[in-house]
Length: 432
Image 1 (cartoon, rainbow, N blue to C red):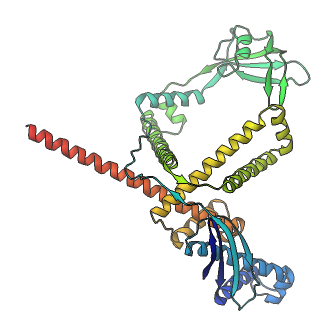
Image 2: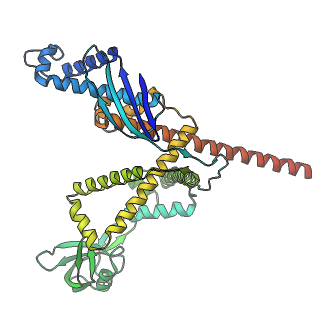
Image 3: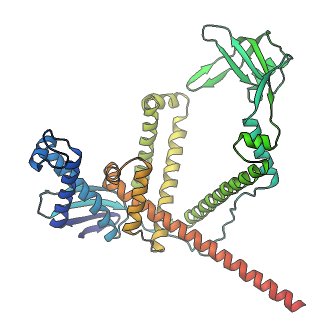
């Protein structure tokens, strides 16, 4: 049971009481899981007494597992019960004991009040790209290019060749160069040369990562020259790609291109609709909300850099030296504002449409997400934590609202088209 304690502006506080029966059920679930997973010498799996298991994992571990289960479930339920869409929240759990009611208090911040412009008559212009015969042929030719072979030739190098070169110097080596995608200074130096020639390639001054490279010369030897061989566009080519015939390849490829084009069109319509909502919204967005989102995005960037072995301080210093740090931070602020506005309009849209996600729907998507990540639902819930689960629930509500709105607009457009066609038919009949 959830009870709203206070609400001042965007600040809220509420208390949640979990009945003793629910607490006992959570304890039973944790003990059942431990009995299954914890191996105790001298006992068959699932037969060790609770006292023995508790001695191996610790009483504190059991209580923490039970507390986590209760918070993961009842925090989200309470927010839904009180119809609160929380930006962020802190949870203060009270004492937990088997057979007793468990209470916790939540202090958080809700999204600001938002008003959307009337979008019911909005006409979306974005459409799926047309898959013409020209597009199909171009895609087939791209397939030929990707499956091309190369054969050695005894002639001067031409612009589309693959040239194997051996570079002088301690850091040199032998490697192929594809001239059709090579940089101009490389292509210009090699075209016209023949196997066995020594060539000097002048590399212009350039930047690479955080290093500046002055103009320099690289000496290479032409080891081999190969010409590109494209397969004929016939049944044999289709067979090399595991298709029965060229006609089957064309049919399946066109179907795949049309499927992707449909997805691209749907994505474009979604973005056009969201942009229209943002342009017409009225909201007083707290600076704290923008700052929090910007800081969150910055932490994501720092984590990404860390996984690449780059320290943020070093990257920040490099940008400062290049005079790019101010632009970077300004762009980060703009992106944070854009994301916040997107969240706000989608949240308000779902609220206006009275969108709901049932427990069955939520559990089904959580199970699918867990399976996709090779986790059990319990493991996923633990990874996400109470705030993460609530955020995931909110994302499902927003997505459902967006789909519902797009469907309404598409339906209205279809009805309008049918009405127009009916009017045209009536006019033509009258004229006759």
